[in-house]
Structures are given as structure tokens and as C-alpha cells.
Length: 180
Image 1 (cartoon, rainbow, N blue to C red):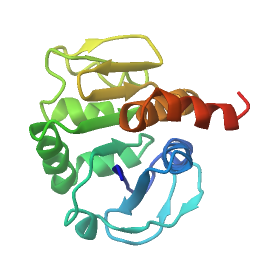
Image 2: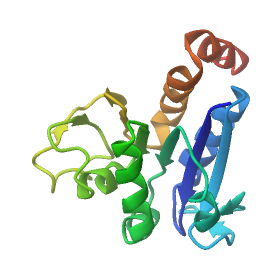
Image 3: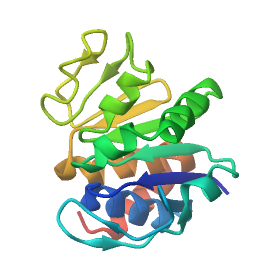
């Protein structure tokens, strides 16, 4: 079974985190959410999110994909955690999927992973990274890096993640059940 880690921090965008977790789970993919300290997280809009495990416990496991939600101050909190930077660098070094939405692609850019790559993000989030080829599309894929613009694109983002891990037929099955 494919597995995905969705780390989140205080102030992460809950719509992005929950949408990704929900869609991946509908596809039968093991999707686990980990908070930086194992405690409940108050999202950027005030929703309380309960993690499946702490980041330290998650880092003891192998995952096929990591997905970083955006939101503020969640993105700043993820970016400030050295474990997150090492995680995304290690995952990229192992040729595994490294994905981010909203402001979180800036974490990948700061880690040096998007140099010369096409990516998208919440408007302005990648402005400080001139080596990233910003694209205006809702979801952008460049090799094993998948980025998306924000809460409004979370469903399309999550469905592409399903397709990459479980195939087009599974994506179509999940999407049909959503009555889009």
C-alpha cells in the first residue's frame, strides 16, 4: 500500500490538509497527518486538527510521498523546522514525490529543490526565488515535484496525487464518487 505523510504546524491551512488527507484515504492510500510536536494543531482558520502521530514518530517510517499544506503562520512554522527541510531533501534525494500547496512551495524552494523547476504557489510566495520557473496553472508537475496554488485548487491537487500513486482508474473512481 502506498503511504503519504502530511505534516502540519500551528496555523497550517486546514482546507488544504484535510482535503488532501480525505481524497487520498478515499483512494485507499495510507495518508497520515503528523504535527510537529504530536499535539493538536489550530489551523489558520481556527479549526482544531488532531494528528495521527508526531513528526518524530513519522520520521521513523518510509513514505512514498510528502505533502506540505500552506497557510500562515503554518508555512513559516514548517519552514523553521529543520526536520521538515531534511525530510523534503531526503525524499527528493530518494526520487520520491515531494508536494506542496499554497505558500508551502516556498519551503521546497528554500530547501533548494525547485531551482530550474516549474512550480506554482499562492501569488507572491515564490517571488523571492528567481531560479524557480513560476507557472500560473492551478497544479504544476515537474518530475516528482507537484505544487498547487491554494485552498481553491486543493481538490484538483489531491486528485492528481491519487493518480500518481494509484493510477488514472483510481483517480476516476474517486472523482466520480465526489459528484463533481
